Length: 255
Image (cartoon, rainbow, N blue to C red; front, side):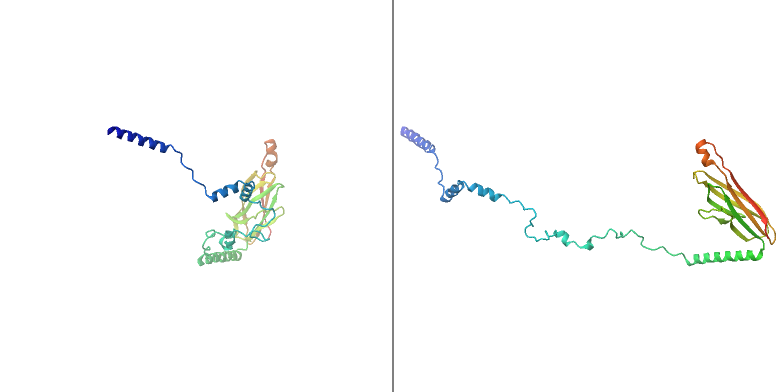
């Protein structure tokens, strides 16, 4: 009995090995697949497929599709942008100017200035009425290359004349004439000069003179400002120069 079982097992194993060794069958292609393969094998099929993939280059000067002779329409963002959205560069910034205007001076300040001007006029008129004595100051400047940077005439420590810019008195000029109290007075000058050839060479000079004004008389004083300096011309070349400054005053009673 065991002998028959062993033989049966060997026969079944050999039958299974033979069945697995047989090759698998290939699937049968359909009719549509055969037709597609035959069309692809034709010579003109590849050229048509390649030409379909290529895009024709644009012709120069030709208008793009969907446009007229005026050209392509502007971008949507530019067309929708409004002029008021972008301010002009000339428009000032909000905080560029101060918010408020300067406040006017108070009323008391204007009134005070008016009172001072009226007081000066009254003092001048009172002086003219009280004193018949007068003082006249005449100025004359000499010097070819001397220029006046500032020039003041003083009377008793008060400035009675201040020269404007580019003041020149090559000819005699009356700078002051007014009634004064009789007696002793001090006439002075304060001068700043520079040389026209070299402005860095400057001089400062202050001179004071005592004069006597008689009762009910007019005294004319003549101030002569002389500058014969050669410092600007000689010193840069020879390292040797000098300042020559003189102020002369002549006083005489004319009335």
